[in-house]
Image 1 (cartoon, rainbow, N blue to C red):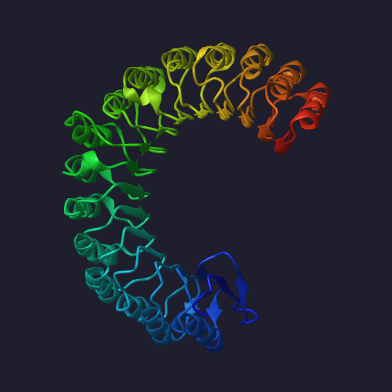
Image 2: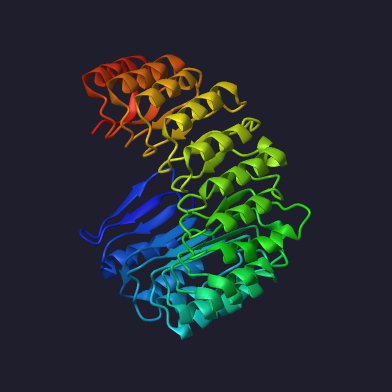
Length: 450
């Protein structure tokens, strides 16, 4: 039994336990687990099986026995309690079983009382090995109790918070707590309405220079919030940031320019996502200039500036600044206004830049590109032998443009294409025939031709 490293799937419909080799987790899906199923689950945990991860996504009618079994298992490294677990005392009992061996803890959609949250916070004192904490869609009051206990997790490296209704005061509390954690490297906050006071608190983090991942997706950030957060980075001579995600906020032109100054202090940046922000052409060009002038030109592999209200002239200027980037593998500029002029700029970028032969993913969907723009783009695609994903949907490139693009892709390389997206492009029969030639030469996992 001690040699088992299996994935145990407990079905509430038939109450059977099935074993899948080469995995190390227990997954309990469904609405309710019968006492018999819970008993089997507990037997596996308590008899010495090497179970590294436990995912609970069902109601557990008898939490006490499960908590005891968790406490007895000395191999458990990851514990995830997901929505549906409303059994009285389950989380509190599991918290009492926390041990130094636990490395990852995720709590999602669980209706925690303040008593249970306080029990979790106390349990953190025993979690000397915990390096990741995730909380998703939990009640604000209980989250605050847990945030106060995070300071005990001296080895914590990453925090992931999603839709907990933290708002500004909750983020302030989080920031104060994170200042106590010397190993903190990754901070992810989604759907939390950070606002001005929370942004100011994040900008004042003493350990902001150690962060390698900062992910602030859809957090109600505007120009003033970005300025407040960037202040902390601008106070540094250099920072360790590798991933910056500001997707789907409300950052405008002035915030985008301030963001460009911020990026200039991030020489290690490998992934940048500013999509879904109306930054406009001027800010996009400023960002390109920062990428060109900083050491990140040697490291940046992913850039997503989709839906940023970038006009054709802005696309041209942005790409001209990016020709010195040597590691770019993914470029997304969808839902802007590149037009035929912008499409030619993309082609020139593919032909001239150091990244042209390395680019694997290109998204120019919904960019007002016509037939002539597609024909120009095809010239660059012919030299982009590493491309495996190309999206042009929503551009009326017509049969000639579609055929030019697809024939260029067919001749550009030999590896299998993962995705070609040409929905609503009007490529007609001629384009479909070119698609057939592409499929015959390189193959394709996913094709979109609506």
